Structures are given as structure tokens and as C-alpha cells.
Length: 244
Image (cartoon, rainbow, N blue to C red):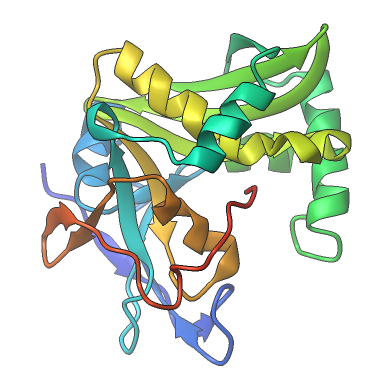
């Protein structure tokens, strides 16, 4: 199947200062299903709501698709501690539909973690438009402690693995490192499902908000038309684990 692709005009980069960014989008009029998306994600694409895109900057290639080969994953000492810290959590998979409790948690999370950004003060329609699509196999995984909702991680299931979409959590539980725990849990769930990779989206070594992804090792990056073993950059080697 042939897909039409469109490039966006340059605009200020949301991650690296003083840079311009462009994206390559699949034509929204194309009929997409989960099988087609499964093929595109292996080519470095990713979805945001219904839209499938890939960075397409003319003077920069620092946004690098990254995935974890889950059968080879070896947790670091701090990741073992995070896992142990959260061993009391119960996980419940939920269908990708509106849930008032989830939305209230999402609002609290954005109010603290992204105050003043364009994501702040969302309405339910924006929330669902961002996290879900009509054609993806999307799941909302709840993490609860004694019945209380601590965090929700959203992931798509594709042919070769799971793709982490977004994680939001109760700021009162930040000491648990819920974002890091969610990735560790998704690695385990991908392996349990008999799938090969956890796709973490785009790694940007020079951006603290996006550099943490290479702390889950080994990892692979998409370069020059194929996946290859990745190595941390000198700028990123001292990065600490952080939440999404």
C-alpha cells in the first residue's frame, strides 16, 4: 500500500533551544489500521492521536527512534530499587475510553508537571484526542495502591511489541518514580505477551526530558533505514533516571 506523506513547515523546536523542527506526516486521509501502523513504527514513525509522524528536520537529526529488546534487558541497580519500591502496586488493564478518574489524575499531573505549557488545563476531548485513535489497539494500564489510583500508562500493541504512548501519575506519589516504573512494567508485559520490543518513541540525548530513555539497556536506535545497537552519547552518560 502506498501512503502519501506531507512535511510541515519549520517551527521552533519544543525540545532543543534555538532550533527549528519539521515533521513528516502520513496523509490523514489515508485509511490506517493497526497492521499498517505496525509496519510504520518499525520505520521510525510514531502516532499522536490519529496522526502518524516522524521528525524530518533539515539541519538536525537528534530525535532518534529508540526501542528496547525486552528479552535482552538487564535492569540497573537503581531500576531494581524502583521496582522493589513499587511491588505493592496492582495493575489493571482498561479499554481505551474516557474514564473520569483517569482524566482527573491527568489534570492533576499536567497542572504540576507542565504548568504554563500548551498541554495545561485540558478538556476531555483533548485528552482522548491526544492518547487514543480509532484504529490502534490501545490500552490504559492502571497502577493502584490499596485501591488508590497512583498512575496510568498508555500503550499501543503492535505486531512486534508494545509502544509506550504516555504516562501520567499522582504528583503526591512522585517519590515512587512512577514514570520509570511504568517503563519497567511495560518491558515485563511485552515479554509476557511473547513480543520482542518496547518502543519508547524519540530519544534526544541533549534534552533532559527525553534523554532518560537510553537508561534502559540494551537499546536499539533507528538510523540510516534500519535498527542498530545504540550507545549513550557523552552528554547523556551522567543523566539520572527521571519520570516522563
